[in-house]
Image (cartoon, rainbow, N blue to C red; front, side, top):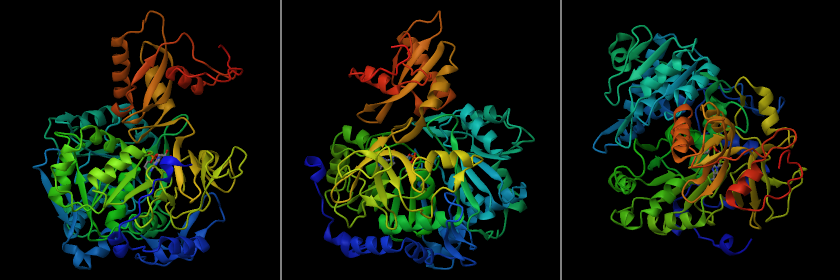
Length: 630
Ligand code: PRX
C-alpha cells in the first residue's frame, strides 16, 4: 500500500485551533475504552423529558435499543430548544430555487411556525402516532417542514425520492400502508417541470390505504384534483385548524422516527427503520465532532432529502446543532457549471458536503468556472456516497478548497443512519481513504470465514460496535434484517462493502460486494433494474451489472435476451432505456446493452454476473466450471 495511498495532507493549524476535537487520538482512545460512556456524554448534550434507564440494551441483539426508558422527540432538540435562546432569530434555512432569483429564508422562529402549521394540519386530518406518512416532494422547504411535522406528532415519515416512477412509488406506499401522501404539483428539473402530482395520481389509483393527498403549489402547473381525496396545502393552511401552537409529542426513545426504502441485493426494496432517541444522538454527534460543524456554520449538503444523506445531514444533523442549513433546488450544472460556486460565494457557505459524482462532473468543465468566484468563506469540504478517486479529491482540495479546506470523506449507509468512517478535519487526510472509524466505533476487514485479514488485503468491511443511529430493523421484515446484516458473522454488522485497511488504520473502501450498484452515488439493486426491463414487451430475460464509469462511478450495463420477433437496434436500446426511466426512475437508466443468446448461469440457475462483467469489459472470464450453459 504505497504510492498514492501514502500521499498525506496535514490539517491546517487554524482548523486545529478552532476544532471541537483538537486531539483526535485522545478522543478516539477514550471513546474506544468505553463507547457507552462516550455516547452517554453526547446524549447528555441534548434535551430529554425523562432520562434513560440504560444507555444500550443488548438483551435482544441484534435488535439493539438505545437510551431505553427515556422520553424525547428529535424536534425538541432540532427546533424547540433553540426557540428559548437567541438562536430563535437566526437563520435556520436558506433556500434557493433552480431559478436562483427565487429565495426563501426561515429563522428558527419561522421554521417552528411552519412546522406547527403542518403538524396542526396532519393532526386535523387524523394522522396519529405511529402512522406512516409518505412524502414525495422535491428539494423545497416544505419537505423539511413536512418531515419535522411528522416527527413532532409522533408520525413516521417515509420519504420517497421525487424522481421515482409511479410504479416504484405505488409499491412503497402499499408496503407501508400509508393513509396520507404529501406531494407537489411538480418539480423543476433543468428548466422543465417534472409532473409529480400526475405520478402520485397514477401511484395511488390502486392503493387501498391512501385516504388523503396534500399538494404543495410549487411549479404552478395545472393538475387534476380529486374533490374528496386531494387538498391544496395553501387552502388547508388558511383554515383555523392550521393556526396556533402544537405541542411536540414526548415519545419513547425507541419510537420510530422514519422508514426509508433502499435497495438490496434481491427482491423488493427494504424499508430501513430509524428511531428518535439514538438517531438524534448519532446525527448530532457526528456532524459536530466528526465534521466539526458549529452553529456559526452555513452548511450546504447538496443531497436530496429523499436519500439518507438528506435525512441525516440536510435536515436533522445541522438543525440539532443549531447551524444554518442551505438548500438548493437545482442541479450542479444548471443553468451553468458555476452555479454551485456562485451560491457558495453569494451565501458565504462555510461547509460544502457533496458527492464524488458531482465533483467529477464539475471538474470536467475546467478550473475557470470555479476561479471566477471568491470561495474564501469555505472552511470544510465533504464527500459521501461512493469512493472518491484521488484525482477528484485533489481537484476538490486544490481548486475548490485552495489547499486550505480539509476534505471530510464520510463512509456510511442508509442502515447506519450516521457516519461510520470519516476523516475528522484535524486528522491527516489521505486522498481516496474514507479515514478511520468514528469515535466509539471499531471496524474490521474479514475474510470469508470471519478472520481479520492482514493490513493491505481486501476483505469484507464489518462494524464491531453497536451505535446509537443504527437501524433498528427492516420494517415488517425482521428475519431479513438478521439474515442480511448479522448472520454471516454473528455479533458483527456486515456492511456489504469490500475494503482494505492500511498500516495507519485508515480504511480504503473499494465498493459493494453484493448486487447493489452505486450509480452517481444513488443506490440501486440489480433486481429492480432487471424487473423493470422484464416488463418491456421485447424482453424475455435481463441481467444488470455495474461497470466502472469515469464520472458516475458505476454505470448500469444490461444483458438482454429478446423475445422472438425483436432484433437488437439503437432504437430498441433507447426504448429500453426510456422504459426503465418510466417504470423505475431516470436515475436507473442503463448505459449499455448486450444482446446475447443466453445468460451465463450456474446449474442452480443463478446469473453469473462476474462472467457478464468480464465479457462486457473484454476480460478473461475466469473459472467457468460451474456454468450451466457456457
Ligand atoms: O458502498 C458504500 C457507498 O454507499 C453505500 C451506502 O449507500 P446508501 O445507503 O445509499 O448511503 C449513501 C450515503 C450515506 C455504502 O455501502 N458509500 C457511501 N459513502 C461512501 C461509500 N463508498 C465509499 N466512500 C464513501 N465515503
